Length: 513
Image 1 (tube, rainbow, N blue to C red):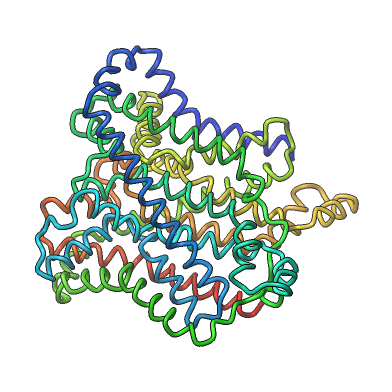
Image 2 (tube, rainbow, N blue to C red):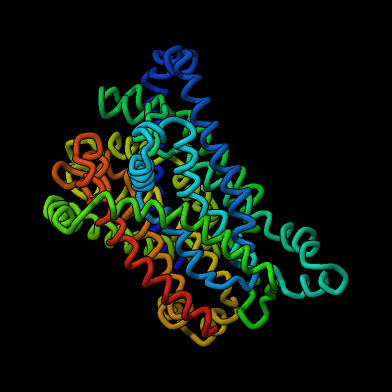
């Protein structure tokens, strides 16, 4: 077991962290920092980009947290009707490429008589990213509410009403989860590329992307990425120091029979209307606008004929990448839990660091590392795209696996070991059956994140091997509004149908429990 997990750890670090490290080393060793220091860090344009980037990420984080945490309590702690439906509606924008929400709202505003540039700039970018990332603090709040021991809330209810219990018992207990969700939103907003490009808002991620794609100034692009790498490193260190112990594993997870719910009484009706209004703003209205802009079946058929090859590649990339991520994620989670060798604990900060990096930075690092004559089997094939996904999203499947594995009593594996079962037998007959639900969930999460990916894929795909999100993104500038809306609608359909099916299965299983 130690040898196998050690080989997997070395393979993971070599395929994911090594390209980023090599890019940073080359940037400093070649003197790029010195030659571009004034241009990148002392010019007015550099400070403008930094100010725009931090301002947008901060505002999105504050707004989503202020709305998402109360929304998560409403959806996860009360008896509000149709809670599963509302949660899925709030989740929809996160499952789509972010620019689709921007396109949909732009179409809606044009239909309403506003100008095409109404959504441009900071305000539009903030609104779109709020819709996209609102579900992150909402879902994290719902999840961590389950980790609060019901006995503590029951004791609080003996002497105080629910608002006081939430304030002094529940919220302090789930604060690490709230902070983790805020960090995730901040970093996702920090590295977002497609929405600022579409809405003409200058940020650092766009500058690095432009330097690489428009001018092919590789040294400038890598130097421009360094501030984003530094922010990701600081965030990773903070998460590892202050949040990891409270968020990576679940020692308690309340079941449906013990979980305490708040009875809303007559308040459920105005709160239901408020939730319905917010769901309409976030999901229903923009999706309706896409359907109206797409028009009749003729436009949808034309869009499908123009994109069926890209759609097929998107599905194949997502399935292959999700399988690869699930395999590595499970083994990473097991290695982090059991610590079979001395440096095993370093794998989690590495995975988190790579996840916090913008997709453009990961892609540039992959291109730098694999663009060699001897590595064309990787660089010139979809393998480089899959390796980019492995680097970017392994933290998701790793943390899901770690959380589920931590809920299995160690005595079960120890008893099997004492009975003579080797590690492979314990894996097949104990660990895999008990974590099958988490493995399936990790695969679905990885599949959906890969299916929506734009920032990484747009730089890594081989010539003629683009995915549907990339094709839509490249056609937005020159394609007709009807064609772009139809393509966005097709993308939404192929993403949301399996997501809705998986969500329905999850809800039914929770109800049976």
